[in-house]
Image (tube, rainbow, N blue to C red; front, side):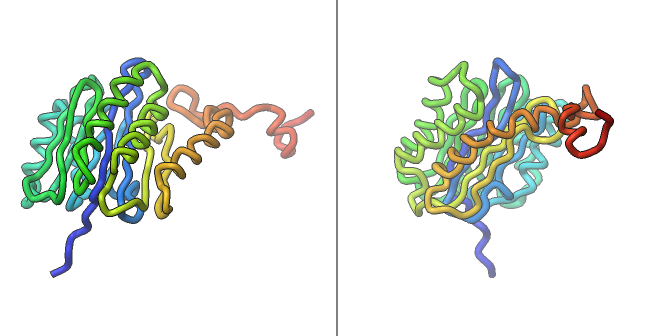
Length: 238
């Protein structure tokens, strides 16, 4: 029998009360965590599925939010679909800031979660309980800063507190705002210092902000493409 994929992970799913943005920051000693664990949808919520990971939870929880469930209701309904809930760790926050989390009794090592207004922090196979405490502390103390920057600071502090006891490998930052596509979707799939590398990617993300802000949107399906850009490519007259 194959051993199931085990995301010995720490993450924070969160909402910004000022902007309404929602997202997840996560890191682990496992390849490409961003492909399996986090999910978020504008106007609904953000969540993570980890430990002996069942990726369907990241879809199930948001589906229940879309039907009008609260964070806690969505989490419980999602767990009810899973024949092995004791292996799972889930964290979710909804569009009003309500949060919920589950740490199954069969999760490995130090494992646990902490929830509060606008956030759900969780981790398993950690060096110690301070890792999750730091996720929560930093999020609460950085109120008013941009959500992406807050979440990266959370990961940095939690990593400094000990992080995943097995080591480091991948990380991800996923933020949604008002569109059906992500505002920020950055992933480090395999790196000796995945949190630092994620911070580096975010530091250069701003260089593309002008282009990204002009993408087609619900309000402006054509997007905003400058005349100079079009002229240089011979797509409009002088």
